[in-house]
Amino acid sequence: MTYGELAARSGTGVPARAIGSIMGANPVPVIVPCHRVVAGNGLGGFSGGDGVESKRWLLTLEGYLQPMLDWD
Image 1: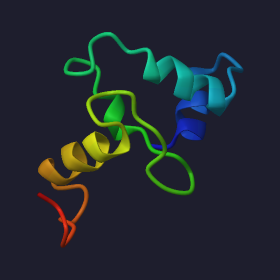
Image 2: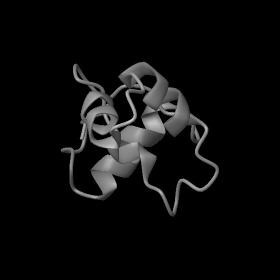
Image 3: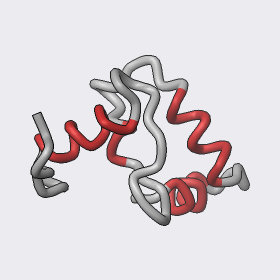
């Protein structure tokens, strides 16, 4: 799901960029898997661990992304 899709589903009129900020402030990312929300043109950001590399790792671990050749 993209940030824009999540914004539309919320029905609140909150723009996609604000949804990204809200997701970035998620205090319980294990329970609310905010790493699964992506930008319309790529992965987008992520505030957990090492940023977007943590997001890439989690999505790869879950089978949503293919492993990168340089992935440790």
